[in-house]
Each structure stands twice: as structure tokens, then as C-alpha cells.
Image 1 (cartoon, rainbow, N blue to C red):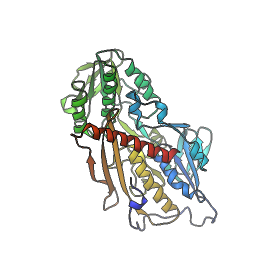
Image 2: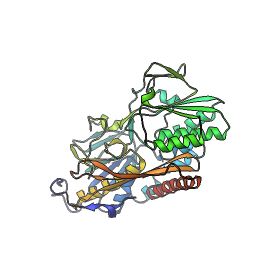
Image 3: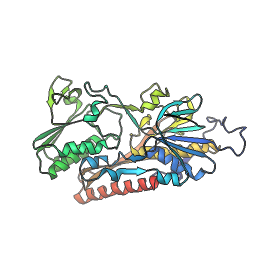
Image 4: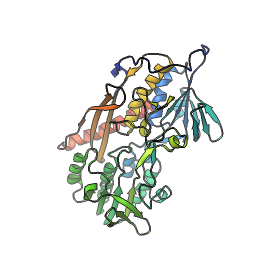
Length: 420
């Protein structure tokens, strides 16, 4: 994992001023507010906590418990309980962080105020890690209300358990339809891992089934790895239909249980998992912080374009070559916290490097991964890839089991760091 010791140091001269601190009494504690207590927001809090005597540190989170998106597919696959993915902010509160459980309705960036349900909170600096938003009009006939009956299970919450219950109730010879979103979206390999783990569960139940993945894309992350394990573990049970072969879904008919492809063909099914295309969090748009689908940020400080006192990390940003993942949000958050601290205390700005490691399981003890490294380009205006390394497609079962264990070790390590 990257850390501050890994950063290539340099001075970013002349781009950041400090109008807030200059002229303010010496004992003033700048107020830093973080919205969103997932991997990104909690990491910012964790790395700023060491300065809690000098900062007024506040986390705003609408839910008292956080359910992780990582490992939610394991719940859907039937070998993990949803409560194993549940974490509270109790220890964060014990460490002295002011945690406010409330819903953010609006951010008044001009006056540096946050409107909650009943109160307003002011800030000097604001860090947003609000997660993802959905384009509910990307599939005709499928909207937010429909997702209650047909859960998308894309936010790590109780809908993962609901999706598992639907899978558990399927009869023999069921046809399952999975529709992944178009790029960019949260956790690129997740729809394909989900297909594997659903197949793993149904195979254990000795059920006959067919999973059809109808895709808007002609390629996807870890494609060769997934294709090889589908052939090895679930032969003739998982079929991927890409864009070039007619996989684009235009419409969903919930009354008659079919989707309509771009060609007009109807594909009937017994189970549907439709995952809408995605955009930045709704809070970004309701607060008029961006006119584009993704927040445009400074990749060195994560300051939001045209908003020097607002920083954004995680799923809602345009991170260029970096994918949207929990590990990416964690890596970005460490950089954001470090350089936000440097801005506030007028220290040197660090030149960031980033890491993302993404594990996927094809069965309970059968895993593989890809690790990628990133930095800012020479102009310091985008994040670029330094390369990546994937698991071999011909790995042994022992190697796959080792990588599955590594995924659990990573999860345990990061959740203990942030929530214990």
C-alpha cells in the first residue's frame, strides 16, 4: 500500500494561498468537515486524527452503521453473512472525532455551510466522499422504485441479502440475466465476480442454471481471467454477450419478465440483476458543485475545480486512469488528507503516487487479483497509470486459494485500521 513515505516530494509553488488562516488568532482551530464515512471519508478522518488538537474534525454520515461494498458479493454467493460486513463509528467517536448522524440536504459552497435535516454546520475545509449516483433512465422500464423489487445491490447494504434470498429461491433450470453498466462505474470487475459467485452457490445446491451477462461493453477488467475460470469451474453455465454481439439492453419488462435488446430481441429470464449506468453522487448535483457527470479535481490536492476549499475523493470523481474502488478511495484519501494538512499548516505539498489492488473470487476459495500503480503526469493535471500486474490465467488451485486468503487479509487489515 502507498503511504506518505512513498510520495515523491516536490514544492508546488504559487498555486495555493491561505486566505483563511492569515490574520486569524493563534488559537483558532480550522474546522474540517468530512461527508461520507466509507473507505474514503474514514481514511481522511484517520489520517487527520493525529492533528485533532489543532483541527476541529467532524464526520457527517447519514447511517450509524457502514456496510462495505467489498465482500458484498460474498453475501450474494451465500458464504458470508451481511453482518460480517457491518461496521460502526463507535471507536472513531471514542478517539475524539465529532460524528454527526444526519442527512445532508445541500452544501452552500459560497457561504461554506452544510444544510442537514434540521441544522446547519459551517466549515473552513470540506472533504466529500459521497459514493456513487445512478442514471435511473439508462434502461427503459427500470427506475429507482423498481430497484426495491429488483435490487441492484451496489452499495453494500441490506439489498445484498435481498438479492441472495431471490437466488436461494430459484428453481431448477432457472435463467439468470445480469446487465452490467457502461464505463465508468464502481468496482469494474464486480458484475463478473457476481456471476461467478451466484454460479458457485447454485452449483453447490446442485441446481441446473444458465447465467447470461448482457453487456454494453466489448471488454472488461480481468476479462481473460474470468473467461478462463468460467470455462474451468462453470462450463456452459455462464454466457457473456458483449456489445459487438448484440448485448446492449434497452428496455426491461417486469410484468412479463424479459429484457429487450437493441436489436429488438426479447430475452426472458427468471432472475434479473440490472445495474444502471453511474455518475457522481446526487449530493454533488443538488448542491450545484458540478455541471459534469464526474467531479473535476486537482489530482495533487483533490480540490474540486472552482472550489478551493472543497476536496472530493472516491467514486464521484474523474480519476482518469484510476478505477472506482474501495482501494482507490483509500489511496486517494491518504493523499488528500496529507496535502490538506499541508495546505492548512502551510507546509510543502507532496507529489502523490497511488496504488489500487483489486481481488475477485470465482468461488469461495478461488481468487485472483490485479494491482496497478499511478502517479500524476508531468503537468500535474491528471492521474496516469504506471503499469499493472495480474494473476496468471494458468495458476494452480493452491495459488488461487492463496489469493482468496489474501483478499480476506486485505479486508481485515483495512477495516481494522479504519473502524477499530
